[in-house]
Image (cartoon, rainbow, N blue to C red):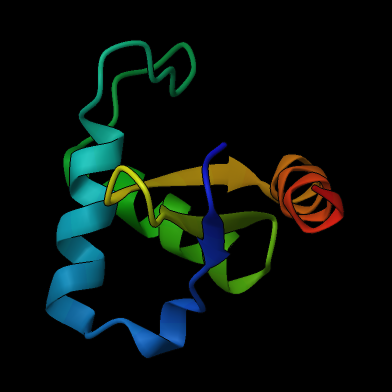
Length: 84
């Protein structure tokens, strides 16, 4: 079973956080609506959502990978892991 850790955005150096958000925004399947947006616009939107705690940055200790999840999904995942 994966061991996830919530990573507060303010604990990640700005350059690394920007790179993480950019990588996430460039993943296949990410949808940003009807109009085309620049990478910088997508990163700004993700950063605003992260700061507003609408999304959370999680790190999977076992696979050493990270992901962004909707806050409710992240809470369920973290609560489920704590119960195991």
